[in-house]
Each structure stands twice: as structure tokens, then as C-alpha cells.
Length: 431
Image (cartoon, rainbow, N blue to C red; front, side, top):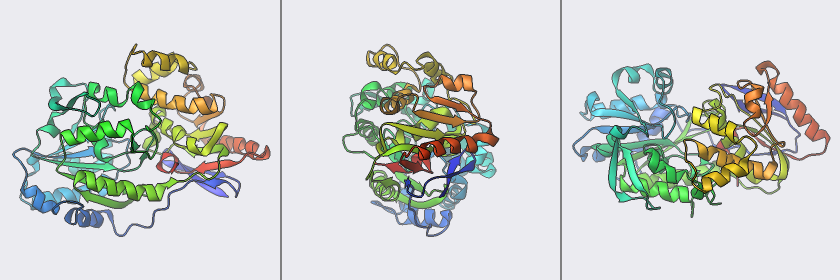
């Protein structure tokens, strides 16, 4: 059978045996366009009064709308203009509205990315702020402590807002169970030291810090506690289908609406593993998720439940922005092929640096497959650099990429290996 996989801003078509185990989402077509679904959702919310009634009760201060950064493919341009217009029709002025990008510890957004996400009209007419986890002048300390006893510091624009609206994409997540909702606050709007526990060794060493698990997941419990400490007034949870188009909104009271969104996503994207495969072929999600190798790691981790021990992973990602942050790149090269040394050092508290958690999750894969069986293909990182990222490196020119991957698949098939397939990468999970 021919299968199309997400890769960068395009697709890759590969031939797989008909008997391959395919893990793909099963969304029905959207009920209407994004604008209509969003309006219906906010006026018929879950667990609270309609949006227009709640907005009337706002406190003194600005209306802050928290949005995702470029690493999440939310098509804000398809519905955010209508939300903003609705607010204006309620008598709210443009200068009373702030769009706050929940970057977590990601870099700030470029102007081009803001236009891509939001549309030029919004970029030209509204105040847009990128959260900066290391800018102490932009942070406020709360009196409450988190679930783990950690100090809570959040973006002051969010804390001081007269009305807080959370938006975010709800999908499976390789350490927090599911993304979106409370994760828009922690790590989205938190300080570096508040995030440190959330992404620290002990949390990620917990087996419950995994795909599609919320119960007893320390990442989820920590994140929920922080979101409760400075709660949003309203949430708009966004579900995307395999084409990255809006499939459904779940809006309303932040925690109830999020729970319903998670239940919906669980039924559409979480596939139970009935039989382990000898090998997995997986996308890393396509653009924007696969823009860096850092983000591509989610594609490796996501497929682990479907793979036999010592099995083979064939993964590929666009990596149009290269490896990731400078801190992450330096860390990966320093500990290349030395995962045990890395785990020992962070367990003993010898350091904590930005993005270290991604290598800790990457090591889960190495423990199951070994480096030689973790194949990664891309056209945008050199072979010399890719080899230092603890993968079996395949830096292939784009025009030869599909043929190279196909040759390896054909070799596996010829040797009688069973294969599991993840065309959407981490957007569909095996459990």
C-alpha cells in the first residue's frame, strides 16, 4: 500500500506491506468552518455561562488571550479574527486586548511567524507579546506553591490581567500525557526556575510521565496545580485533524472543557497496541513540529509502545531550522553516545540547562532500540552534525530522501520484519 507521511511543508509517499499495522487518527469531517464552530463553542460553553456573560464580569485590567507559538500548527488566522471582532462588538477596545504567546522556553516568534500564524491584519492592529521565561522584569511571583512545593513565577501580563483566555491545541504529548489546557500556563507562561521541576530528572524518570497518561503523571499534576494557582477565566481548546485543520472546539470553564477535549482526542488518536512490531516507520509530524531535531524527538518517543525491544525505528523530519537551541545542540554533542553519563550527571544535580529534558526522553528510545537501530533521515542537517545527535544518521539530499527511506523499508520487508506505520508522527499515538 502507498502511505503519505508528513515531512516539512510537504509529504513523502512510501510503499509499505498491506499487512503493516497503521496507527492513524480517525476524525470525522468537521461540522462546519472554524469560525462557525468557534462561535458556537464560546456561546454554548462547558461548565460556565456563555462567553459574552462572563466577559461582562471581568476585573480591572486588560483582556489577555494566550496563544501557542509556531511549534503548534494552530490555524489562528481561521478563527481568531472573529473572536477579536466579537470582543470589539462587546464594547472592548483594541488597546484593551493583549495577545500573549506562550513560548515556554522556546525562542521568541519572528515577525514572519506571527503573520503566518495570525494574519497581517492582527499583527498590525493588536499588541502581541512573546513570553520570556528568563526576563525577571516580566514575571510575577505567586503566594501559592505548586503540587511539588515549587515556587511559582508566571508572566506578569497574564497574572495582572482583568480577564484571562487560554487557547491551545489538545493532542497527545510524550511526557505530559496531552498538550494544551494547563500546559499553556506551565510551561507556556512560567519562569525558568518554575519550569525546572516540571522538566527535571525526577519527573521525567517517572513511568507515568508518558503518552496519553494523566493519572499520577507528575508533569500533569504540577501543571494543573500552577494553572489553579492563577486560573484562566475562559478556555478555548482546539482539536486538529490529520490535515491540521480545525476539527472541533471545546470551550468554557478551563478544567472541565479541557477534560472533555482530552476524552475526545483520546478516542480519535490513541490506538491500542495489539501486537508489537519489529520495526516502526514514523514521520515527526511535518511543519511546524519537525522544524528542529529537538522537536523531532517526539516522533521517536511516541511510537515506542508499538515496538519490540531491540526493534528498528525509521524516522524522518524536515529540520528546516536545524538542531534546536544552542544549549540543546551543545548538550547533545557533549554527551553524544554517552546517555548513561548524561543521566548520572543530571540525577546528581550537576547542572540544569535549557532543553536537557529532550535528551532524557530521547534516551528512553535508546534504551529500547540502541543507537544503531534508531535511524533518522533529514535533508537539512549535515552528516557530521547529525552523527553527533545519538542516532543512526542519514543526511540525504531532499530529491533522494524518499528513495533512501524506501530502500531501508524494502530491506526490512525482505528479511521478514513486521512493520508499524505512523503517517502523522506524534499526532497519533500507540498505547
